[in-house]
Image (cartoon, rainbow, N blue to C red):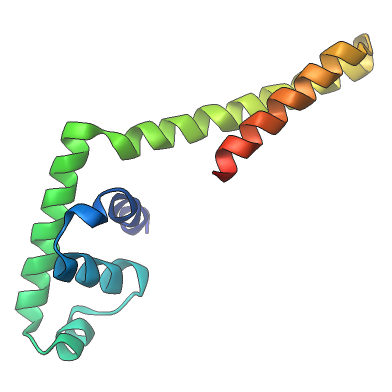
Amino acid sequence: MAKNYDMAVLIDFYGEMLTEKQRSFLEYYYNDDLSLSEIAENEGITRQGVRDAIKRAEGQMLEMEARLGVAKRFREMRESLNQIIEYSDKITEYNLHHGLSKEINDYSVFIKSAAMTMLES
């Protein structure tokens, strides 16, 4: 499952750099969960032809990710934003029980809101 998720993320980032046929095969296989045989039948080619095209496209995307690291940076950014949200909640909770500073609460709410907006983009 994790490998399929990782490949789906790579398709999102690098799919446009592949040929239309490669991208279609990857989307059928990873996003639509079609088997190699189903793709082959729909496309009028052999199962081995589909497999070869998918493996070649996977290799290209993995090479692009190794060189560019876009998906890795995206994952790290999401993790950092989630931590910002978590710590903002902790600051708000601490402030509620220990000081009740309106400014601290307002800043914490603003930081959390900004992080959540970035996550949703």
